[in-house]
Image: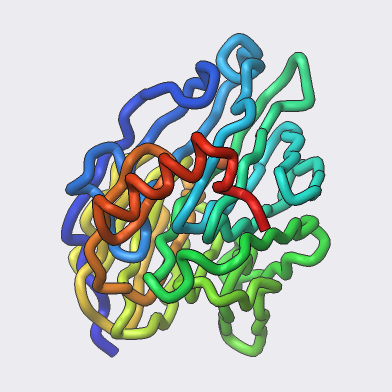
Length: 285
Ligand code: FE2
């Protein structure tokens, strides 16, 4: 099996979004830093409520999916098509904004740690104007695979087999994402994961130290590592152990025109999204 090389490192940069939530953005911190079909990855992590309490009040999306994964804390979600949920530790929300949705994402705690991720995944042109859909996946529905060397993998999307153990994640939507794993490896442990050779694959190391590929190239903490071609991914946790996300997705191969929370194929479609939003039509049935 050809092992993928760590070819490009996108270090996360501090930024703020919503009503002033402090976060770190790796993918998507500049237009050139997308990795088809992945548009953006934000990590929010703070023990200081001033960094997150303002939340993300009502805002629109069109043309893509948002996938929110909570590690610590609580976030309430409400949207224009009547959905409401409270995401807690280990929960996932998979939302296909598609034609349009207006929603709010508000922390439901006044103290303590808030930690999690929001991933933006593009939709192909044929799906961008379909009705919005939404799914909350509670932590108990996300299977975990224990590893021989210690550690474990949560399978949020796709399938994983290690030794005689396997699991399939609960998300099988029309998403381009084929694999979304949350991996915890103890110091010195390594993991090899087969991936679709046609798909783009990246790793986001959010805690500890890791070396990627046969070359054992170090990936800095809080950075996304984009991998080259190959049939498998190999990650080794060095001295401190490692926690990381591993994402694989089928490239869409279409032009991307983004204006804030609207991601379409052409400038005219962006103008239409803005007009629809201003006229109150964005999230209409
Ligand atoms: Fe949002």
